Image (cartoon, rainbow, N blue to C red; front, side, top):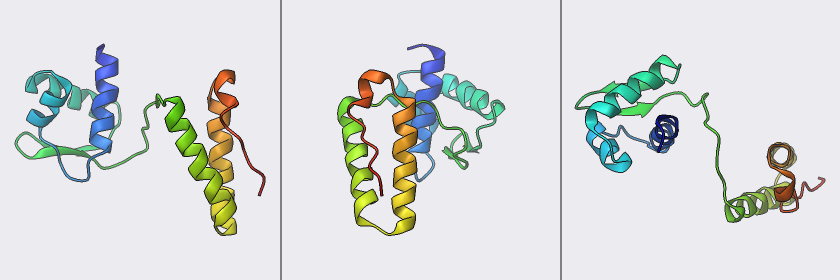
Length: 123
C-alpha cells in the first residue's frame, strides 16, 4: 500500500468512527507502527482535515468537507442506486429532488461501462 493509499484509508477509518479511536488501534488496522500513525495524522491535519485528539486519547474527524474518492463495487453501486430510486419514488418532494440530484451526480462520475447500472428516474 502506498502512503497516499494509506492516508486515504486512515481518513476513511476516522470518518467512520463516532468516538475517538486510538493510534494503537489504527496501527493494528493499517498494519503500520503507532509512530507512522502520528505522522500520518499530522500530515492530514496539515492538509486541512480537522482531526481532533491526541496521543493516549484517540483521534476523531470533526469536519467532513474533505471526502476522499470512493472505490465502489458494482454491487455497492446497485445498492445505492436502488435506495436512491426508492427514495425518489416514495418520499416527499424535497427528498425526491435530493435523491434525483444524487443519482445524477453518481451517474456523471462513473465510467461509461458503469452507467448501464445507474438509472436516473424522473420525479
